[in-house]
Structure formats: C-alpha cells, structure tokens
Image (tube, rainbow, N blue to C red; front, side, top):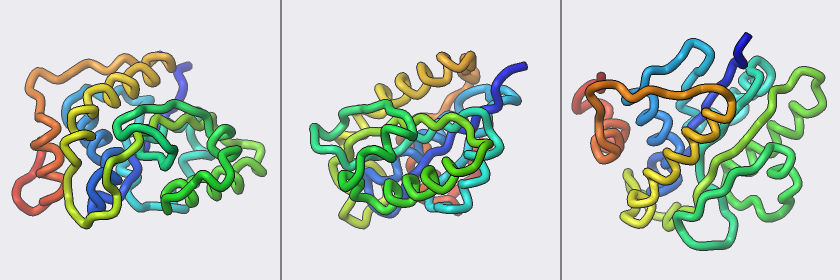
Length: 182
C-alpha cells in the first residue's frame, strides 16, 4: 500500500516572496496529474488547522520560505525534527506556527513524517502580490527539489499536456476573480 502524502504550500501571498509555497502548490495542482495518494493543500495561512494533516497522513511535505541567513533563492530540505531544533532562528510567523504545531503533534503517538522544502526569500516585508525577480528565476529549482522529494516517496508526477506558466499561476492566485484556472 502506498503512503498517503500531503504537500502543503505555505505562505502569505500578500507579502511578496512569502507566498512562494502557495504558488508552487497551485502550479503542481494545475500542471500535473495528481495521484490519489497525494493531496495538494493551499496551506496559505491556515495555521493550526493544518494540524490534522500531521496526524492523518504518512508524510507531510511543506513547501515555503525560511528565515535562515544566506543568499536569496538558496533551497534547503530538512525534517520536522530539524526545524524544531532551530530554536531562535525561526523569524517568520509561519515558521513559529509550524514549529508549535510540530511540537504539539510530537506528543501524540500518530504523527506522520514531516519534511520541509524551503527557500530563502528576497523580500517578505513589502506588501505586494507576486515574487521578486530573483525568486521567480529560482522557482524552477524549487519545483525540481519538490518533485525529487515526492519521487523519493514513490510519487512521480506526470505533466499535463497543456500547462500554465508560473507567471500565470501567480497572476491567477493573486487575482482570483479575473478568471478561473483549469
């Protein structure tokens, strides 16, 4: 029996690069055939309501930003345990909430494996929908890293015949009333 996996795209699209996890999750949902054992979740700002995913899925893959020191666009993969061990280095609201949820869930017997795929943002301060040019250029690398993490769990996503660009995904997510995505 294959693992039940949730991929959660985290981030607030109102603060420039912070929305990259939300955009990437939507990109996957729109452009790939999603198998029945994978659920793509717009984690946006769901906070503690995401806790059920940690308990109901064998693996939770979270995609978003991190506040590590480094070069904008640098990508990291690490476990939930490693995130909890980061201590005071957590600086964004999402990092703090995720860590708190992981700590609470770790007291329960039934908790899936948690892995994070994150990128260092360039700008999460300015109120602006979309991604900075620096991060937009690095999104294909984040996509590849995310697809690899899924592949390591036995999930190989197949691209749909007709695909939508990252720019169009960002536009649609940022302006949901303009038109519906397929």
